[in-house]
Image 1: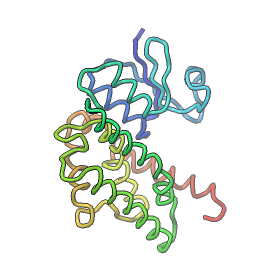
Image 2: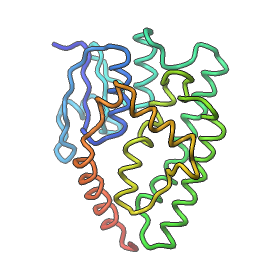
Image 3: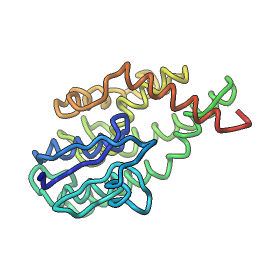
Amino acid sequence: MAEVKLYGFWPSPFLHRVIWALKIKGVDYEYIEEDLSNKSEQLLKYNPVYKKIPVLVHGGKPIAESLIILEYIDETWPENPLLPTDPYERAMARFWIQYGVDKGSVFRALFTSTGEEEREKAAKEFWEVLKTIEEKALGDKQFFGGDTINLLDISFGMIAYWFKTMEEVIGVKVLEPKSLPRLCQWAENFMQVAVIKENVPDHDKLLAYIKGMRNKMLAAQPNK
């Protein structure tokens, strides 16, 4: 029986955060793919509050919510640390991770936007979020972690592949070299890291999934 198990759903960017962290740490694990339309008894047992993936099970003990899982992984397997050792730098990394969480509604507004005017407004608001991240968090560094990726890179990782695929679906470009040059370069750098490049979903498969996901979300909103 595997000591570490990971319950997930293949398109989830929150799942991939955890996969990247486990790979960076060199942790062997058993992956269990979930059918979210028919969740397993094990998933419901291990995450009875939110009933969502990802869930990491270590030695029979479950941990839910991707950002909490990431910190658990970093503390449990200290090799290749994901958070800075300096207390101030560690606090700043957590600050920007929380900033990304707090701006989730801006991301969702862009994802479900329809019509040119609504789409442009949502794109402008999300661009402002990305510009703040570029100027205040990334600066001139290769990665948010400096020369190597850290927990902040992993938490923002979906920008580099999931968000870029989403742009194709909604027909808008926000992450552009002209307006976000350093963040675009970071995205390229991030996707060239072997552990990331080798552990992202197939582009065409993800594109089809995101299209279907967006259509369902729009259909569920009468005003859309």
